[in-house]
Every structure is written in structure tokens, then in C-alpha cells.
Amino acid sequence: QQQHQHQPQHQQQQPQQCRRLHNEAVLDLAICRGLAVSASQDQTIGAFAAPGHQPCPPLKLSGHTRAVTGLAWAGGDNWMRLGSCSRDRSFRLWDLERRKQLLKVDAHDTAVMGLVLNSDCTQAASGARDGTLKSWDLATQACLREVDVNRNVVTSMRWIPGTDTFLQASEDKCLRVWDARTMSVALTFAVQSYIHTGCAVSPGGQLFATSSNGFGGQGCLATLWDARTTSKAADFQGHTESVTSCCFLDDTSFATCSMDGSVRVWDAQQTGQGRCHAIYNAFGTGFTSLTAIPTPRNNQSFAILCGSSSGTVDTLGWSHGEQELKALSP
Image 1: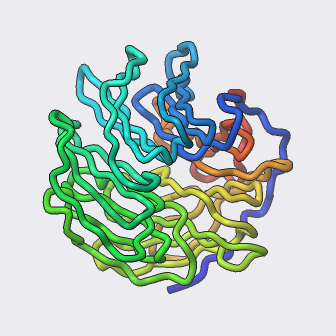
Image 2: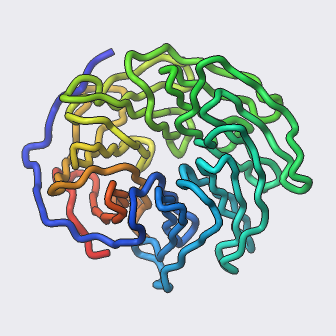
């Protein structure tokens, strides 16, 4: 296991070009088909046209009474559903096209920090700060199963594509894979030294990534995990403050953002000498969330959306082979 500290030759510092959707921090971002969706500390959900997709008026969804902490989505040929969870102890399901709330579930006794939807949106699983995880029948809003794991303070949950399982990160520094059908732990990974702030699943489902908290360069890690062997592939160092979020661009690269105001793209390949592909440094802004989408008609280029502590969303561009992240017009 190696700590990858190789830096790109050029670090770009550019003025921010951003979209303001919220008055407070953007806590999660998701791509729902052609829409980019944001969850905020200001209790609202925002949505706008994803880069490279057909323009549409931005929209805001209100209903939660405390910070919206996480997003999940599922869709078919003619339908799409968005899920959101919140510190108000609930999760909700939305019809984005109609800008309509479909259901509200008062799910836990403490803040709900993670939510996943199965592929046909018939069931959900939620996780809270009190260590409880629950599965739900969305047609009846009935709780199917509940588990309580001591000290498992949920920080993030992501569905693993093509399976009936989901990934869950925790303040107990342990990464777990859960079987959503039985709500039992399918895989457990080695305990880390620093709290996991977020987690991500590669498109092929074979790699996981976690982001970790820290201060002054201590901690501040991104970690790559091999789902097949449940082993840690590598720690990636370079951020100087808490790494708040991570996402995969494809099966060979992933991105992280940090409260140090930087976004980094890393080499996710487990053979050869790994490295940091590119760095973007903002001015005076900590980043709190990110997601990415391939550029239409070019799967070697990506738009990376970065939510900030001030409520803005930056759009960055990166292509394989490049050593810089470029700020794009919102």
C-alpha cells in the first residue's frame, strides 16, 4: 500500500466562475439524467441543467425544515425520482419534472445523513447519526428492517450499481457494504485513523473511495479500496484541510474536494505509479461536495461540479491527459 503524493507539473489558480443556488453550504450534489441537483444547509434543493445538456430554468424545492444532507435518485425510460434526506429526521421523494413532493417519511430519531434508492424505486434505505439504518417499502412507507450498530454514526451512503447492496461511511472510521434485502453487513473494510466524511463507488462497482477529515495536513486523505479483496489500495495525500467529498469520473480516475479550497483529480488505477492528475485552487472558498458527468459525445472529458461552503457551485473541466482543471462558465 503506497501513499501517492505525486503532483501535476502545473497548479492552476483561477478566478471562480460559479452558479449561486443557495445561501448556505452545498452539502451534496447529484446528476439526475440531464439535471444537476444540489442539497443545502439552507433547507432547500436546487436543480439546473447539467453541463452539456439542454438548458432549462433552474428550480428550487422546499419542504425540509433543517439542512438537506444527502441525495439519491432512480429512473427508468419514462420516469425519474429524486430522494433527499435531512437533519429534520426525515427523507422525502420528489418528482423533479413536476416539481412535486411525492412522499415524506419521518425515518429516524436523529439527523438522517444517508439515503439510497433501489433501481426501480420500490425500496429505500436510510442511515442516521444515532447508528441506525432502516430499509423501507416506498409504496406503503413501512419500515421493513432496522439495525442499530454501536458508534456507527452514518456520514454517507451510495448505491452499488448492478447489485442489491450499498456502501456506507461512518464516523467510527469503518467502511461497510450492506445487503439492502436483509440489512446485514456483506463486507467490512479495515478501520482507518480518520473519520470518513464521504464515500463513492466506481461505475464498474469494483473500486470504492473515501474522503477523510483532518487539519493542517494531518489526515486530509482520500483512500482507494478494492471491493473484490476488501483491501486498501492506497492513501492519496495532498489536501491540507478536511477532504469533504469524493466521486469517480470513470473506473480509472476519481476526484476530491476539500475545505482548503482545492479540487484534485487522482489516478485510480492500481498498477504502476499512481499520481495526482490535476489541481484547481479557488480563492477563499472551502469546497463541501462534488459530482461529475462525462462530456456528451466524449467519454474522455468530464465536467466536475463543486459545491462550496458559501452556497455556490463551480463547474470545472478536465480531460484525460491534461494536467490542469479549467474553470468553465456556469
